[in-house]
Amino acid sequence: MAIISGLANGILLALINSGAESVLNKNIEIRYFLLYITAFILYIYTQKYALSKASIALEAAIRKVRVRIVNKIRHTELSFIENIGGYSEIYTKLTQDSSIISQAVIFVVFTIQSFIVIVFSLFYIAWLSPLSFLISITILGSTVFWRINTNKLAIQALKTANKKEILFFKTLNHILEGFKEIKINRRKSDDVFQQAEQISVETEQLKITANLKFIDILIAARVAFYILLPILVFILPLYSIIPTDIIFKITTATLFIIGPINLITITEPMLARTNVALNNIYNLETQLDNVINSQVDSFITTPPDTFKTIKLAAVTFDYIDKNGETLFSISPTNLEIKQGELLFIVGGNGSGKSTLLKLLTGLYYPTTGSIYIDDEKVEQTNYQSYRELFAIIFTDFHLFDRLYGLQDIDEKHLLDLLKLMELNKKTKYIDGKFSHLDLSTGQKKRLAFINAVLEDKQIYIFDELAADQDPRFKKNFYEKILLDMKQQGKTVIAVTHDDHYFHVADRVLKMEYGELIDYNGNI
Image (cartoon, rainbow, N blue to C red; front, side, top):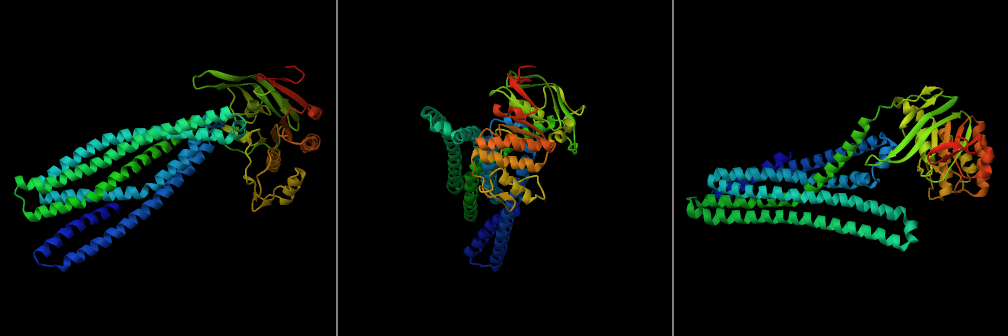
């Protein structure tokens, strides 16, 4: 439709010239007027159709790509998410870059239409005067060749600026997420700000470089046109016998293409930015595909209703940096957990507690060693089913606004849990979501606990869940809530430093420099 619209626009040029020629000869023909109206209606209809359909198709494509990428993200492993270098890159590509692509659709359609008009007009000039066509092609072709090379430099600057913007958003995240720290440390605040300012200045210079290149392209297009016009109108008739009416038509055709040329020139920066945005999204998806393709397919089967033991047999894990160097390791670990056991794990910061829990829950694959459930080895093909045994609350937990994954919720049971967690006056469950999530850290942990309990899993992992609670609630949590869960047959593993309640646990283990030992010091 864009092509037809461009052809209709070009036909309007021929009809105007023919109509003007008939008026000049004092021979007014109504057929030119009727043909003009027909071409005009066709031009308007096809242009609107092309713009509408292109907009609808592009938005549908962006939606599919976004959903497809989000789906791939959730099928990657935790290690990929942790190593991707911050979430700013993903956010930028799925929001900012998607918006750039969305805004480009009208310009794309107009560019196609303008290109057809230019081609039609050049063929029209060739039909009127081959020499004029040859001159036009030479001048315009030289300009296009120069523009292509200049455009490459501009796009390269845009790509580098895009990378700088991702760094800017990462620095902004430092300011937002570390606001408390920079608020009480002026030097840290100044350093972070200077980093953001420096990145902004570098981004500004790169964008200025790109914009200046685009301005050069715009000016070059204007210069080429205004060189071509006097050659065709003033110089060519001096050296070639061309009738006056043909000169008039060539002039009209040349003037007619100035609009499409200007539109293409103005659109070029937008299309260049769109091309960079498309490449960013493609690169992200390629990165995800490479990670997913390197994984062993994990099949979801129903986890066992009961189990007797889970064993970690000589399990190790290594954190590796980009250079292949080992940063931290979990020593060969042997651990047996019985169903219905209440297990406490203690250890200092950086001792490996969280890493051990991620290995235990299947979020990390062991570097060496294996996990067994009732003497059956957990393979990577059924890791997802193994993971379904667990409900987890890590220290860096995320609190969802809805009870995702839960259907037919017993609202009375939910209300009882809110009362038990002393949250019934802080938030309510209305229309499938919690009404109020602006809670303290301790209250958020309690709400996350409610979500975990409603999942009704066999094994519960609590990483410092009681750390931000008041003494009265801690006592209730350790001496009543956890014991009630144990009585229900649930297996509970809690990371804690509350030694006043160690007597509640069946066992207390300690992580020390990546090694798991008995709390009393026995390996």
